[in-house]
Image (cartoon, rainbow, N blue to C red; front, side):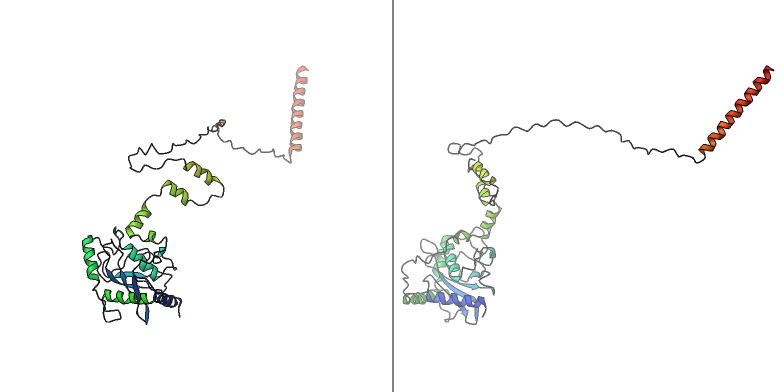
Length: 314
């Protein structure tokens, strides 16, 4: 037996042993635990859905509870489109916000609490007048499902019989059960797709940016936090003037004088000189004999000159 089947059998047993007078949910057949139908009472007055009883379908993935189920209403309500998946943070449209600790009971309580919420472009939502929703609530009590076991009983018959079961288990159906509340933190996630995208696209405020910053291990974050706490709040009316009467004065940051540095000498472009290699004189091996020959020639010339001088005097 898979983990998913064990979880669904446990939830079905819990819903039977600890029933809620506000809804009834069970698998359509014992052979398929991934297809459930539910009968849900509308929110209490003064909601336009008060007195209404709505029928819907829950389709669970094979990896439940790791992935969320999908929900759709089969009874016209004026709040949700008929037979179309609802886009909520607990449905398959937003797997990133689903928590495996939640279950079918939590999801149905959340849907019942969210019926009075604003549509605002929600996928699967309808925007109609309260008069139409009141009329749908009146007619929903006689709506019948041909798929569920019981021979096509009306929503009112299904919920009435279920409330008799609740009475047999000691549940006070005349009093709003304080334990049947949506877990804290879940209502904040029950937003239509348009709301969540708008919140994601809006730039965070300065205080949100500071709180979302990671922890600073160097201690500089505390200094920045002290400086940001002295900044006045943003202008709410958008006129650019702000609330000067109640806003805290701005504390200017100390301006440090610039550090002066001595001027660096400018280096002019000097032509690069390429050193020429010095050539050492090559000593000739015949230099001693050449010197002797030159010396001999000089001596011979001197002797010839002396002879001519002597001959002229004679």
